[in-house]
Amino acid sequence: MSAKKVLHRFAFEHSEPMRSVKRIIDSVAPTDVTVLVWGETGVGKEMVARALHEGSPRRERPFVKVNCAALPLELLESELFGYERGAFTGANRSKPGKFEQAHTGTIFLDEVGEMPLPIQAKLLQVLQDRQFSRLGSRADIKVDVRVLAATNKNLGQLVARKEFREDLYYRLNVINLHVPALRSRREEIPLLTERFLEFYAQEYHRPKRRLAAATLDRFTSHPWPGNVRELENVITRIVVLGAEDWVGGELMERQQSLAPLRPVEPLPIEAPVVPPPVAVEAVAPVMEEAAVEAEGLKAIVARAAKAAERAELHRALGRTRWRRVEAARQLKISYRTLLRKIDEHGLNGRY
Image (cartoon, rainbow, N blue to C red; front, side):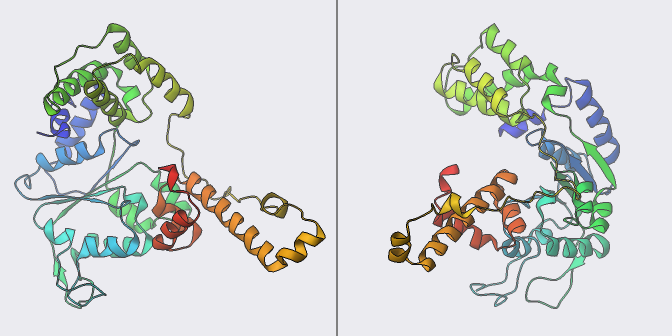
C-alpha cells in the first residue's frame, strides 16, 4: 500500500474543511461531469481526483494520470493522443495515447495550467466531440472517458494573459473544487504525523517512533508552505535518520526562507516583468585601449552577449520557480534549447 492510499483512507474525516470537500465529492462523483480541482502544491489534489474516480460507476475501469508539466510540447502531444508508425523520427511502431488507455475510465490531467496552447486546442476537441486522431493519422478515434483536471495556478489570470484558452477554461471548470491548504486544517497534523510515522517505519524497516511533545507543537504551529507533501517528507527523514533534534531549526529556517506562504500568482497582464537592460559594464569591464586591441571588439561583444544571456536565463527560471517548460515558453525557445543552454551556462547546480 502506498503512502497516498494510507492518506486517502482517513484524509476526509478529521477536519471540517476536508469534510466539506468530501460532501462535494459525494455529490459529484456518481456523475460524468468534468471537475477542476485547484489548490496549492502538495495539498492532495490527486487524492481528491482518485476519490472522485473511486466514487463513480467507472471505479473498476482505468484511472490514468498525466502530468502536463513534466513533458515538453512535442512529447506531451504524443503521450496524450498516441502516434502511428512513421509519424516522426524514431516512431518504429504505433502507440496508443493516454486517452485511449483511459477509455471507459477516467483521465486525470495534473498541472493542466502548464499545458502548451497548441495541445489545449486538441484537448478542447476531445472534450467537445469525444474523439481525436493520433499523430500521423487521419482516422478519428472515439473515446468514452471522464476528464478531471488539477492546477495550482489561477487559470482565470492565465486566460486574461492569453496563456490559457478561455473556451477550454469553461469546458474544464464545470465543477470547481478547492482543496484547502494544510495550515487551514491544522487539526489533521497530529493524525497525519501518526499515519506517516507508522507507514514509513514499515516501509524502511525502522522501529515506530513517538515524537516529542515539542516536535508536535512545532508541527502544529508551522505554516507548511509545501502542505501535506512537505510534512510527509519531514517525517520520512525523521524515520530514516532515527532522530528529530534537527527539526526545530530546519522548520524555522524554512519559515523564514519560503515566505510568502501562498504560491506566487501569475503576474497581471498590465504589469509584466520587464528585465532591466544588462549594462555592458556589468558583463564586460571597461578595458584599456591596448587590451581592446588585443582581444578585439567582436570577442568582447560575444562575451558580453553570453553573460547577458546567462543573466536572462537565470531571471526567467527564477520567475517560474525553475519550471523549465514555463521558462522555455516565456523565453520563446524550445524546451530542448533551454536544457542545452542551462547546461552550457552551468546553471544545473540549482538542482
